[in-house]
Structure formats: C-alpha cells, structure tokens
Image (cartoon, rainbow, N blue to C red):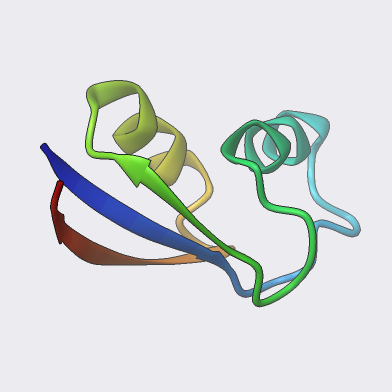
Length: 62
C-alpha cells in the first residue's frame, strides 16, 4: 500500500477547532513535524480539509 508523508508547515493558532482536531488526529504536533500514513480515503479527506497548513509527499510502497 502506498504511504504519504505529511508535514505541518503552518501554525494551528487562530484556526477553526475542526482544523485543529484534524491536525491532532493526523498525529502532527509542531511545525515541521512529519508523520507517515497509509494512503486511504479517510487520510486523503483530512489532507484535503487542511491542505493550506500541511505539505504532503508520497512515501512509496510498503
């Protein structure tokens, strides 16, 4: 299954509570913190909602 590397690039300060919860659910804590997730529809939806705050790159196959 493909993986995605998700990195928090902008602060969650001043953002709506829904966006803060999504960032927390993705496992991101600080700016420039990177996590790896499987490429699923749920993760893609979370990425789409917070795309202005994060950076995504493909991690390859696992």
